[in-house]
Image 1 (cartoon, rainbow, N blue to C red):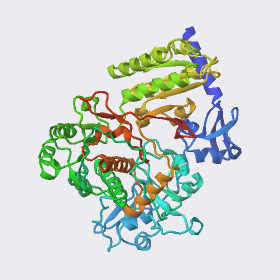
Image 2 (cartoon, helix red, strand yellow):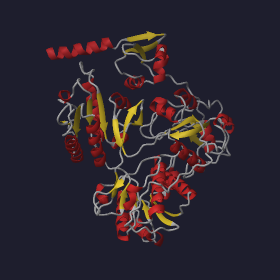
Image 3 (cartoon, rainbow, N blue to C red):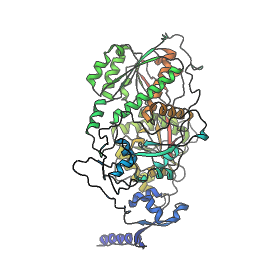
Image 4 (cartoon, rainbow, N blue to C red):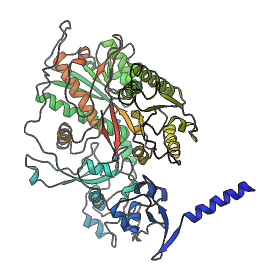
Length: 618
């Protein structure tokens, strides 16, 4: 009876605390702002937009402060009724897709906006709700489909001063982890301007793949934009035999999946977004990045004959392709991307003594007993090893805690970090603790006992090397509960994880920022770097679109290995440590632990979430 009474008392307290007020006929729930809360977090908590909250609370123009009481609208914003046309049976219609504008629809069917409005009386072109119907003019070309390579509205810029150039508006496809605020920084614009250009979108719920219009400055051509590949610091092994050629043959294997992409286009409904098949898009951008690298190589006298093959993710097809004369004559093989087709190519490379580079993450066993394989993506065990040494070097005087997951791979990574960290601090005299504190985390609903590992005397450095997406999300939920308990507010925390956390879209961005999340990575694109700016400008000029990450990957891989071919010829792998050139996406520190094995990239960045975007700290 007492237990039931206690529960009822709690419920009554909750109801009385969630005060409701009515202002000008609109019902609001009052919310008291807690420490470190953000408008984004509050909007998600109450399932309302940030705009709705700021309109109800004009005082927020001065910022959100702890202890403030703000009004939260209890009813969703009312959307004006939109008149919908009723087509005749012989008229063709278009169903408005998410984010579509009248201008985009007019371009799709090769008609003007006025022609669409003429047959859709009463339609507001600035207010096109998702799923609404538009009658198409008789001259609309319904069969029009996008090209395999998307072409966006990008101006062609000549050599002129930046003062005389007008800004341009381009379409940006949102990638995982991006926010509208990070876009504003990327394109040197403002949130308000992005909102103005996208009136039909709720920018608080933008997701991966959404198209956002942004205003940006055009990238200028530079009169002499080349790099020198004959590095004066390059050292040659006197005992090595270097066979140089006038032209080198490179075979590139990618899953373009052209047939699959065409099938999707043919079956696409009018309401479906105009998107390429994912593998087609990745492969196309990788190929375009490779082409750009070949242009740079040609400008400094490196001649490469590139043969490109569509693997179609087919292991039987890859076997046939590998037996073609031009592949057998290769000086370098790039790809394939998929594990099964890559296995076939790796065996072929070893048999024919051709160096093969893996652009994507492959199992570590790929390089075992095969010196003809080079992995460009730093593996998670290598990242874990680097992280352990980095923490030992920089945070051994703090409270270091290791969170160990429950599956076999998680335990392996945790054991690796524990062993390397403890070995690395043995001879240090300023350690806060003699060994790393380990916490075995196997529950999705509780972190009982973690408080005993934390301290308010030093900064708490929490390492969490998990490969389990669900466990990663559960950790942040449970850890946040612990940190919100009374008396925990003085505990300073920084969480360190591995590269895969960047792909975990189920981790709240507010939690990433609140707990100072750091991640290891083998790649980093610095948009303020002049090399990256020049790359983006060239890419726009050549292909009329923005590069995605795959374009950067293709560029770096081809440029780096083109330089190796020029300096060392076909058998260049032994010379990986002796050449350094500036790249736009990653740095290559390729090395082998055993002469019988292949090569792995050992370069690792440490990235930190700051102001809702990633920045490099090491």
